[in-house]
Image 1 (tube, rainbow, N blue to C red):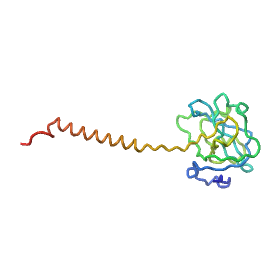
Image 2 (cartoon, rainbow, N blue to C red):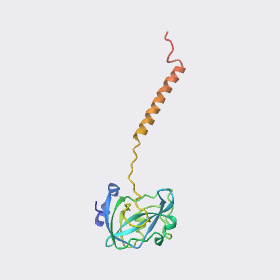
Image 3 (cartoon, rainbow, N blue to C red):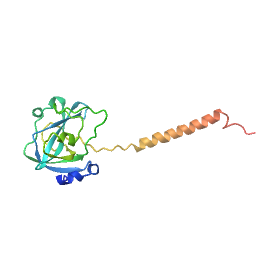
Image 4 (cartoon, helix red, strand yellow):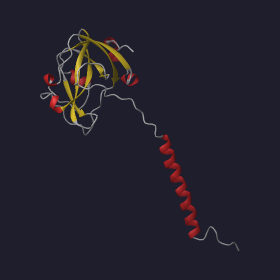
Length: 191
């Protein structure tokens, strides 16, 4: 679907649109935010989040993908795409700060929570979308950052759950009969 327009952002229910595939067109600002996270194999690194100006004064924060910690700096991973770009991504709701989340360090450009309102405060005078868009795997050329972090993979473990609970029920029935038999309530002669 098309990205919601900036005039709709204030009334947008992000939860309703989360995981929607959206098409974006705009120009990246020469700025990056580095969100501390893990890669697909568990290595420490950063998600490179760049503001995309979709309309004069209105930006969407785009998670362009993961880079290892050694490639955090812009010149090490190829920099921000230049010129007008169009790509498809997945709309995501901001993360809520939890009790155990670390403290953001804007001086070192290290962010512990993907919150567009907090990150966007560093973009003076810009209207920032209340959501983040995760770029699709083939959105940008180059080896780094590696896009495509959003995987909608809902596990279907219903058979496992059914076998577990019916197995537990069968064991409970067996214990019931063994208990009553050992107390002489089942299997004794009636007089």
